[in-house]
Image (cartoon, rainbow, N blue to C red):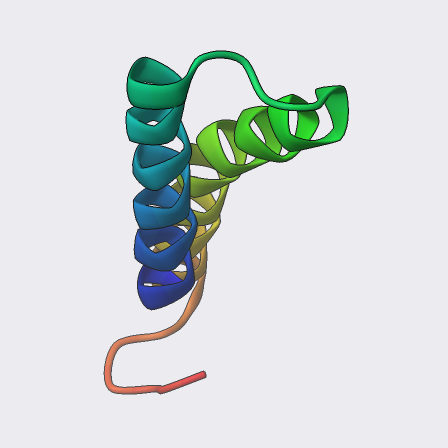
Length: 60
């Protein structure tokens, strides 16, 4: 989950950099950037919750 969150976050940073350099993209690209910015914290929270839920020594 943490790797997936990192990939989404890198995608969002790339989109923000593009926005800063080239200006506002098409609305669909803005929606994708919002998703890429909102999902990493959710994925990190889920990974943390999963670690807490699993018994010691178990791997998911």
